[in-house]
Every structure is written in C-alpha cells, then in structure tokens.
Length: 84
Image 1: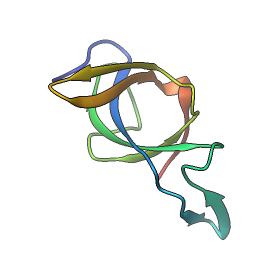
Image 2 (image 1 turned 90 degrees about the horizontal axis):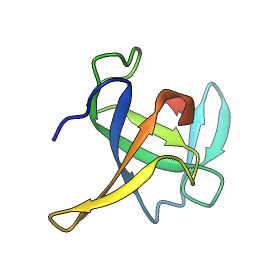
Image 3 (image 1 turned 90 degrees about the vertical axis):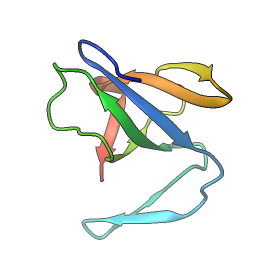
C-alpha cells in the first residue's frame, strides 16, 4: 500500500502504556494523550518523515480504515506531534 500527495499511512500501536524519554522529558505513550504509530508509507510531498519512523500523533488524528484484517490510519504532517 502506498499513499499519495502529502499523506502518511501509519499503524497505531494500541495498548502501549510506557513512557519515552526525549531530550530528558518523559512523554506518556498510549494513555489518551498521544498515540504511538509506525509509518508504513509517505506521500511524495511529505518531508522529514520516512517509512519505519515512530511517531506520536493526536488520538483523534486521521481517518481510520481496515484492510485484510489490519487497522490503519491516514494522517497529515499537521497531526504529528513528534518523530522519534
């Protein structure tokens, strides 16, 4: 699967309740404030994000869909909080 234009295809990792440290700050993951997602595909107009990156995104971000039993989201760069 690949996306077009300025879209990003991600798979959200549900149930992760750990914290991650970024520049000395502990950021909660998967507890309602942020969702952790793996980038599967990026459109040609997306800069600074590549396949395999881990992102923190807003919980209500993007449009969800299911394909062959797997759940995905298509988001835009404005819905990304942090690229790890």
